[in-house]
Image (cartoon, rainbow, N blue to C red; front, top):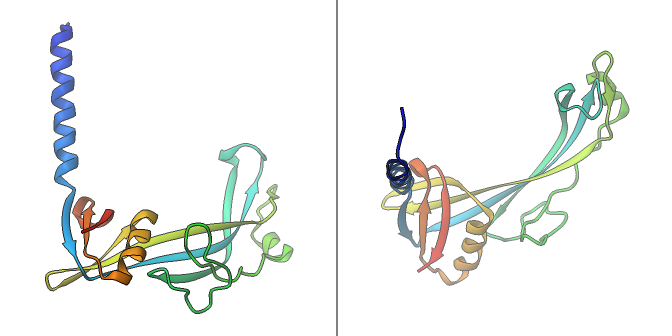
Length: 174
């Protein structure tokens, strides 16, 4: 079966148009004046165990102690030890570093233990009021910072929602 260049271009345009329509259908916007944002900062000690260092398929990772801190609207949370950092979030105290005994306890036969590494993660959420319903959704750093800057002036925000309203992808002052 052969296709002409013109037919291929038409098919490509049709597919791109359908993809764009599907993407746009999942993005709804709403304006709200009641909102707050949180950023959960977490430190986790991790150790890699490997039977063949340098080969990913022969490596597994174990998580050890973790500490978390909930930042709300850019304010310094109780228990903050450092911050705000260059992204505007505060951090908890480091969890205790894993001991050699704890690492060896999880070691399997023929595995080598790597040096413990600290993993830093931030999970962002926004809670907003829409009608008589409060919704909490995952979001990103940019939305978090927009909320932090808009709150002192009680500025309304136009929120762009992700698919099934499970996330907020953008916030713009109105």
